[in-house]
Image (cartoon, rainbow, N blue to C red; front, side, top):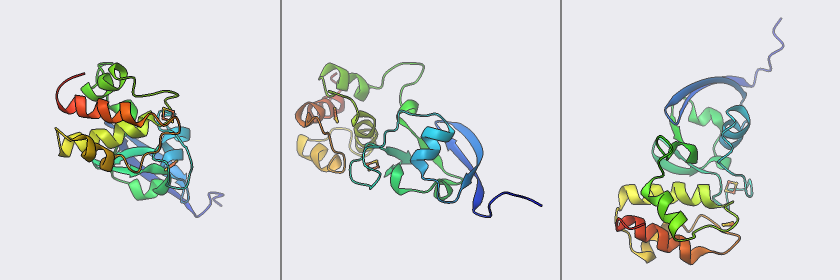
Length: 161
Ligand code: FES
Ligand code: FES
């Protein structure tokens, strides 16, 4: 007789280009799947209530708060986390701009900021500061270093670092 709880589900999720198949409780949040099951701890948990944006990842190219998505809802989907941005350890222009503009203090919000801003730049490659502010309104920086973050995103859009 199986002792597997009936609520466990097998999910197949492509994360940063690698497909993982795991059995997860139906209630497992995507953020915990990424952090605890796949050890991708770059995605942070700041609130667990969908408020702070630290857990932002891309789900089929769309930024989502992974504390507000169940792993089973991502079954069959493609997820990109902050670990999936740099290729061969080469920072993206946006990541480089964050470094150059000192757009982080403690860095806790940075993964979510990067994922939201990456999605913005994919849709709008040269955003204005006001457009950046709107795009990042779901991401909270407790260190309140917002201006440098906005500057970095605008600079990345202009091809500056
Ligand atoms: S941890 Fe997901 S929005 Fe804060
Ligand atoms: S840099 Fe500390 S929370 Fe944003």
